[in-house]
Image (cartoon, each protein chain N blue to C red):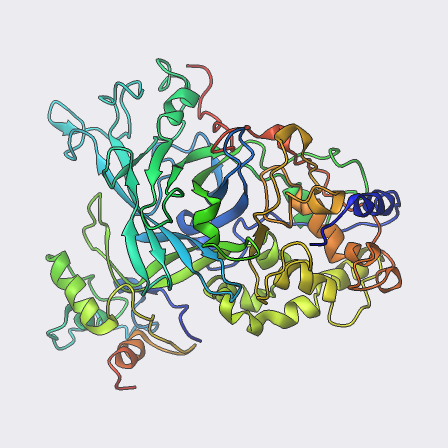
Length: 490
Length: 89
């Protein structure tokens, strides 16, 4: 199998040594479409899929789907629970037909403290979600708890065989940690230790024998995406050819809610020959929602009808900078198997032309952008192409994970074949990579997709200036780090 | 456009164009969902006393959670969508 080589790394290093232009970027998928911006609890923001690089866990794939963007840690008194009338899903295609073969479904529930009655003082219900310190051993001051159920579906996500995933005790319910309200609430136990107690061992009984164990964690984490967001949206009010760490990460003081799942490689590939899987996340709401005139705590609306998808995310940045504004809502409601309807956005991207108009950089001229088709729709030949033509992340699981301290944040383009776009790790700087690819960087890498003459400005070291690398993350599951506290003076 | 409609049946947004009448009382229908959807945006919001009954009435029209979402068109009113779900449009 031909894979990207050190020669590619050299080519990329040469390519990024030039200068002279500017370019744009957006947050991976935070509030990227008009409709989903109205529903933050079900807004998928980032999706990661990589061979686990935690020592001793190399035979697993980690899947991470982030939701509920731009959380200010101090966002009390309600903070950032998941939607209990939504369906959150992670889909895996292991047969190369752009249809899910495995889906992991998450459904959430919430309850008040005191056995669901709610904490009270003098028989009057308190207005807060906690009224005392919280720890794993003492939840008496906690007035709000979330749990979830995890179901594995084999086959079609709606009509396939559904098998409940069990925890280590054989139960089917998993607890989710309370958000990091602040240091006083978590004064008797560090939030890191508290949250770690919510990493659950699970059994995937629908997986082949010997590949049924894994882990799951759902909870608040520090925002994992880095981007110079404000200046980017201000008509690219930054120097995109400056230092890769020369600007502020606008999301550095935000949190996110993470769904993290660790699954044996052999379970996800289903024994296919090439070891390549595709993956994406989605969220859905029931099609009908009737608001209550007198809403209660647990169920302020009555929902029914079919699950109707409202968010979708595979490759980062696609619905931001590729799909046109009129179709962004529709893209979020679509499935990869029907991506032909969006093909023109990839073969004739508008972003390079916008940048040309703004800054004079030259948009790639190659017809139908075979470089972008490879990057976003088919995978790269010899690396992670598997025959499907659809937008999703693709991971060749036969490629060994790169240890954290050896990862290159430019991934495959820098010779680190275990990184983006062969899946995506938290430390991969997908903004810088995607900017360069959009402007034709692949045309300068002798891949047979296009030529340097097709992308005269494609060899520039575009960056948003917000650094993203593996040092910013943990080496162990769930990799994303402890969320910022809402208060630090407790 | 198919499969992309989240129908928010708030009484405040049912019809898209209020009649201005303060005493609009549509004929009561057996199906609670259809009944709720028949009110205008300036009418009094309807009380929901039985969640399970309403869920059942929604399911009777829009089917179960693993079914296909009902298609809708750009200019559809909620009544149009209900009629389409019932196969009469």
